[in-house]
Amino acid sequence: MHENLTRIKAVSKVLDGLKQEYVFVGGATVSLYATDPELAEEVRPTDDVDVIVELASYGGYAEIDEKLRELGFANDVESGVICRYRLQGIVVDVMPTEPKVIGFSNIWYPDGFANAVTKALDAETSVRIFSMPYFVASKWEAFKGRGKGDYRTSKDFEDLVYVWENADDFAEQIIVAPADVKDYLKSELSTIMNSDDFSEGLYAHLSGGYGGKDANYILIKLQQAFEIY
Image 1 (cartoon, rainbow, N blue to C red):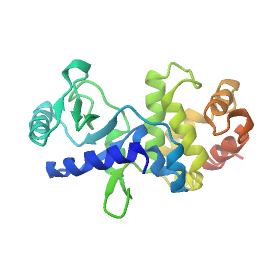
Image 2: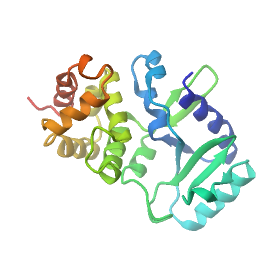
Image 3: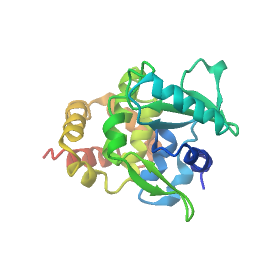
Image 4: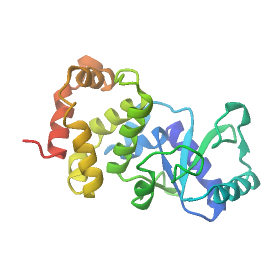
C-alpha cells in the first residue's frame, strides 16, 4: 500500500472515534481514482492528509477541535494553520465544509461532501472520498487559487493529470455528473484546454513526460467528457 493510503488508513481508524461523518479530500486520495490499483505506487507522496467535516458554525468547529484532541490529535501551532493537527507523526488538516467557519474553504466542499462515495483501502478499511467529478472540480478550484497559472509546477494540476491519465471511466463519470459540477468543469476547461500552456502542463506531469503518452490522449478524454465534437 502506498504511503499516502497508509496514512489515510491510520487517520481513519482514529477519526472513527468522532462518531461523525468525515470525508477525505486532496492529493492523498488521488490514487483511489485510478482504474488500475497497481498505479497507486506511482503517485506523488503528499505532505499531509486532508479531511472535511460538515459544520456550519465556529462553535461546532470548537467542539470538533476538543474531540480531536481527546482522540490524540495535537494542534500544530507552529504551522500557523488554524485547521492543522498532528497524529502519530502525520500532518492532518481538518476543514469544515463552510468557509465562514474558519475563513477559508473550497466552493465544492459542501456538494462534494454530500455526494461522497465509499472506497476500499484494503479488505479491512473503507473510507469516504469525493466522487470523481467533485474531486476534479475541487482540485481545479484549488489550482485557480494557489497555482498562479503555472501548470508545470502545480501539485494540484499534477493530481488532475494523474486522474485524467489513469481513470479509464473519467469521461463517463463527468457525463452523468450533476449539472452544476459538469457545467462548471466544461466552462472552466473547454476554453483553455487547447492552449499551449495547458499542453505543456500535461506533458510535465504525464507518466514518461514527452516520451510517454501524447497530450492528445488527455484532450480527447476531456472532449468526450464535455461532449465537444
